[in-house]
Image (cartoon, rainbow, N blue to C red):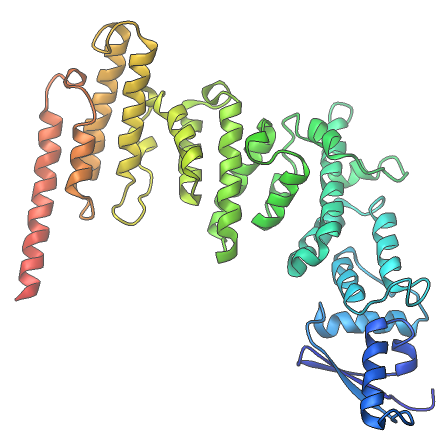
Length: 427
């Protein structure tokens, strides 16, 4: 090369690389077109300009992406040393710069695709997980690549589940590399049957490190989206995942989190609720998904499951955080009581005042008195909500109204002191 450089590339307004036109334009259709236009503009269609400057706005990976591309070009079409986590960046940069087979045989995009096809057979669990995580920065540009990586990730889970009976080790890396041969990718259906059919949970924490949109895409890939979630292990994973994801949520994650919470509720409902979850487990589910948010349909479905077990609940089970208008979600408890009362009427040929139904009703009556005493000191509790809880049960649910009167007394004292405080601050 006669010149030190003849192509100055500005990347996303932050980085500048000095390169050679003959090297870069031999592989990049985009740079070739930009260099051609720049030459014509400078020379007026005459002799080639000595050097030129182009701007690459929106290049995936910025300066790092172009640096990897340049290494490939200056190696005459040989991939530089790459980590699996570099793959999405290389793939997007190659697509952005039009480094296809039409421009030159053996170009970067084809090399990147071959790299993943071969590598997925040998990469460790940690490598595949790192590659999936690195897709987060590139959004829809790597949708096909992300789907392939997620399929491989859950195939590794399937392999761990299939070998669990013959090996005491549950390490995903030892399982995936035990045969010494490439492991073919499994179909979503085979993955769903094998990896989600048992109680294997070694993968929960690793997969829980993925953002909500990626987890949502994985569930769609497995065919367990929405009401199609009929898998108990996947449901348990979602319930494990949601508290962590909610604590780290971003603004863009809210829609995905609500969707994942809905899927968890569909899974709980399909499992029969109390048939797979204990009373405490169902109330824990209610607490988890309430903190994230649910669609009205799924909230109603879960309330029906939980409300029918209200006679087995404890006070702590009912202390679900409120939505800002009070310390606790009092409206939720009121709805649970209505479900419970309705279920007694439906299940019993006799009215709820008789037999075992009467005993259950009295247990809930005592529980509501405790709940009223707990919520009565809440300054943010509206009168209408307090009364809704107090009046939610039949008269036969209580032997006396001493508990209600005591709670009312506390509530009135708090409300009076609050009113006096407001009056004093106005003068």
